[in-house]
Length: 107
Image (cartoon, rainbow, N blue to C red; front, side):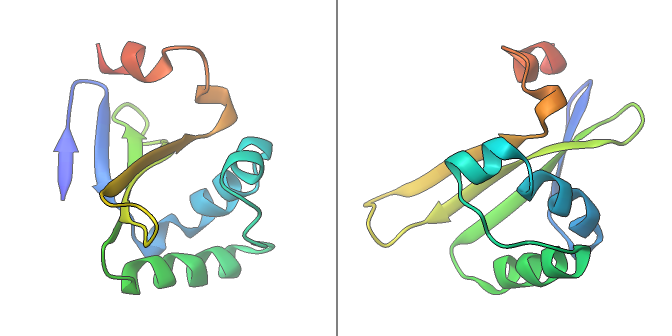
């Protein structure tokens, strides 16, 4: 899947995103709000992505800036055992965590 707006695109997460996911998953906010997944290397990130890709009812998409093709975050959609409905989440790299940054990027 690929969704394209004026400034941002949303792409399927692939193993090619391992370096980006390594960076994102080691940010303080990821560890605080999502949890430390013990991702110590890009290889660990690649293995984590493969687990995501193999898991039913779990989807991750990468948010990418169209200009420069820089990955800035992820959007998630997953069914958790303890919830009646699917859970939607997101995470951004710290430099994109400015208040309303996604809204500003989308305009």
